[in-house]
Length: 336
Image (tube, rainbow, N blue to C red):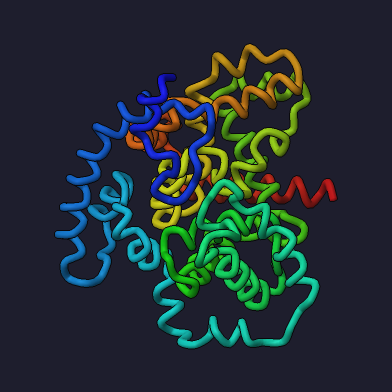
């Protein structure tokens, strides 16, 4: 790539992440030129919708959210739709009391160990930056560990809390959004046994067998466990897996529609690349292919990608997901 061509796209993205060496600036510029027009149009519509002060609920808002929440409204909309705002309003001062509570050296050490591993490619989390967001991240994770002692701290939560901090620029709001995700939207993902996470990986396996039987058959034939190829998708909610803007668009819907969105994203990635995945002949091969399908223009063009997740997998109700969760969970518990 010509240096002049590369230089038109800033080395640091709007969220503070350094763009990788192999970043395709030409493809990104082509996408962004059209996407910025869409964003401006959406922002005007959202401003009108939010003029009354609160965030309304209903079909119109669901449609708006699926088309993307503008960055300037994202924190407010996430807080309202997830129930985090209501929790924060009902518990004034609670977050700060958690930070002043009894010390837990084990919890503190576990969080500290992961601070430097959290977004080393983001300038806002680097120690040389003032203010460095590592301290904010530490506080949010520490408060959450005190608040939900059944979970404490689990790897993966650092990436999620980090994204929340980047979007809200607010410690307390990040804490309550983390609580919405870990406590309500994704139950049992981060408990020591991770039963919810293991269950949902099995649910994805069942959905693939039903909707994409050729891929399901190959996974079975090669003896590939779903946890081997998708555990990071689930535990990090696609952070550090898909491009930042795409992850944020997924989270817009996750806060509003719940965890079935994760299955829609996973099924769309697999369906779009079905032929490519079916070329795999070994376990290392299939693991590599699952890494490759999270890169490239398909996932970078977040607006088209989000349209696809609501059309490609076909119907997928929370009732279907709940039923599959029940049977998969029972099977896992029986296996011990």
